[in-house]
Image (cartoon, one colour):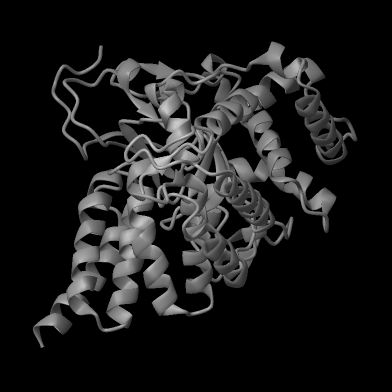
Length: 441
């Protein structure tokens, strides 16, 4: 039975340990395989594949690692694909009693691994997924050999059902800065559906997941609690394609079915009154200024350059390339055009990476309205943007502005992460204290 007690914004409504998780392989020499903290780590003396920050973490990880250890040792020095290692861990968890384990989302409401949707029929007819699973099956067959030289990999039907539950229920484990550092399956929280207008958010401390309400709710009703599965800084068309490709459903939230959302995200800027316009329309709806053929051509060229440049910068953002795009966008794309917002985001991070603090402040300030509009007022990414701006303002000795941004960061992150989260205690609060002290001098 679910609680009838009212839920206030910022309330933690679920805390859950993972059913199974893996650290991304690219971090295995710099983060602990158990607590996921960045630290000086030492390799497991047997497999030499995973690393731990201390003996306590090694001992805590041993009940599961002892089963995968010989398999990881077998494939050295090769690196196991993250999805392959995750499948291996799920197989081992299920072999050693995990099929009976429950994840609770209320006092009496719970889910087992087999309760998760596998989307078996959809995956079986998805050529790309089948190809991926075939490659992982080859990795596992080579890796999961017992002491009698027999394969311990389940048959392909069973493996596909496990794989389906993984890809449609898996979470990216995020660090304090919202960078993905691992993959996990959580049983209880799998009850939560998606919305592009979520009223809750999932954050992490190590491998532990926390869900906080970002809106007031009359009661704890999990059928009415939604988180976002995808990047909200995308057009409705992109979001729906992502959800269909990865989760096998189409979102029908109000943001996705509202044609105005697509138009706003792709808006040009009116040359007469600077309002957002659709270049396919003959005139601006606000001032009746005509949309010229030249304006349409500039818009098409600018969008093409922007989209191809952002695609090229998918892994690393380059400040010079961002500046070229932003110059081209000036006077062509509306300030809330989502492609302009994405470019500002890339430019902001690129400027930070190369220590161009004044540029970073400019891009970050311009980024705030877009982040607030598309991510929502109570999103960790908006809070982190304010925190980064506050930190830069503090470095630049603009103490009044630093305090403002850090207070905004605290207001948002206190809701999305909870006041007890290490991000607030170890990073945000010391910055606020320093800014206030400097301002009072």
